[in-house]
Image (cartoon, rainbow, N blue to C red; front, side):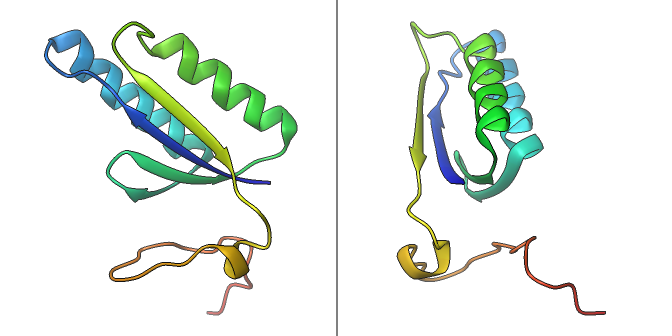
Length: 96
């Protein structure tokens, strides 16, 4: 399934800056960045649970926010992108 992960981490302290880097790295482990604090991830149910668990472990739920949206598939039909896009479809055939 494809999910969209969006987050806002309070970076007014060193700990907040460290959490921001950790959240981005966790998201990068499961998907690709499409905006500064937005990632698209292709995951199965277990990977989604791992992603959610790792993010919640890292975040300060009193200061930060996290949203995970399940995208309707197929992505190409329901996601509209305008302007610059660096999205890479890792499921597409690789042409060398």
